[in-house]
Image (cartoon, rainbow, N blue to C red; front, top):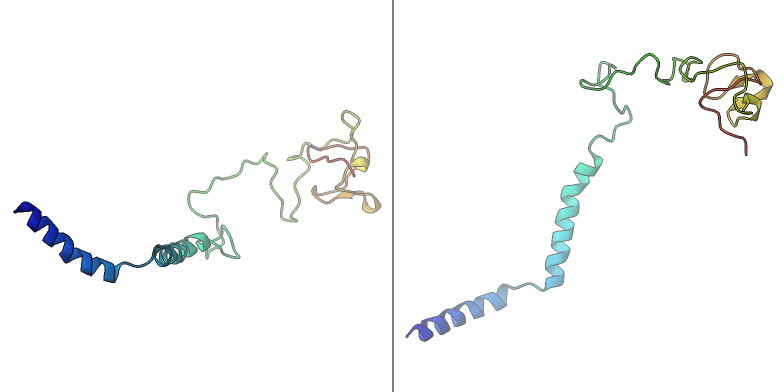
Length: 129
């Protein structure tokens, strides 16, 4: 008797399941499209031209406040001489005139503000190619 019920259930579901079962490829394509559709907004979240700023122009709440000694850009977009430990003497044979960032014509630097001595040195020193 139990075998008759089991066989009847199998036959009942067999007809309906075969009619509604989609090929595996169609199911996987749908899942991929759905997943990409859900991930796209998450990937684009925070993509803003004014990254890190809010409408008032202040730093976002909870952001760390840089220390005064940090190598942070000044208002000119360059780092201060103090923040990069600039000195007017060379260090270990490294001099500003051998640095990639040194601009010889104006005795200035691409990264550090102010007048820079060709014999100077700072932590941003990088050998010319």
